[in-house]
Image 1 (cartoon, rainbow, N blue to C red):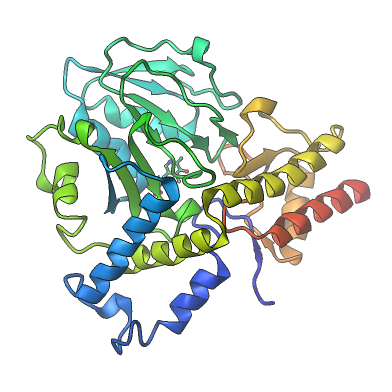
Image 2: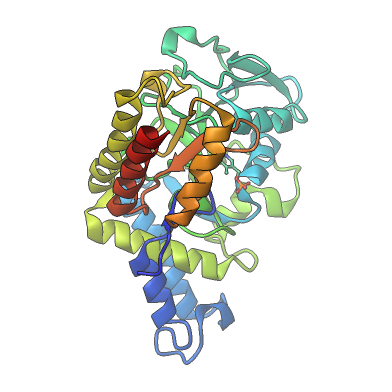
Length: 360
Ligand SMILES: *Cc1c(COP(=O)(O)O)cnc(C)c1O
């Protein structure tokens, strides 16, 4: 098998079946004698793929009818700006929970449009914990509350979402979107760059509730209005057709595998065996985050020295394990075990960790 064990944080591993389908269909897709990359986004063949990607996402989540699924460009980083551009005006306050690097970037953009209350985590962002309800200083009547469900760099994850007393929740789910079943109803807007858990880079999934959409500002550029894309079924301008096609392929695999509850069991098993390995050798492996804040997607840990961390990454590479190095801002080791990361990869890295600890 020429495939590596891919633990990259993003872009990240995709299901072999989704890649093979793309390979099979590359020269002649749906009997068109062309690839999806070469076809008009106004054609009925592309439209079928586009709508299938949307309906698969709705079906997997169990999304109520008062939500729309959009496929946008510019990454999750663009959403940091587009959310307040649509929903925050001078004199209004939005609450942001600062759980780390990505949340901080979202905060910086929101400050350009209105008042930001950092409801938890301070200016720096809390890198090792996830707040409990009582820890939050929420603003009554805030425009929205922004949450980062999984902190890709720090390795923390919300396992219960805040009760915002009716204030709309906006959630950056980039690195744990569809990792497990969830109740969409508390969320007014969800966004997720595809390249972590549901596809390749180039498309960002947005789920928006109609009541929030109706309150969007109108004095902003057409291309940045959620309403533009909602009205045109994300076909206002040329969408990233191939990326959306790949999202379709990935979601079809997720559905075949048993949907989000099967995903959850699979992900918990993978993450569980790696955390167990960390906990079994506390004098060698150290998890820097609170136990109840641990991410099921990005598992971050330290070794006794930076030299050993470098050695771990280098030896892993020889075993065809890629992407083990922690984010450049925090160092250490990061093992990303997204939906599409196979069980064999989690097993391989746990055996490697055990052997490495013994030998060093
Ligand atoms: C990767 C990531 C982003 C940034 O995504 P881009 O698509 O590169 O803009 C934002 N938020 C989270 C939680 C991420 O993991």
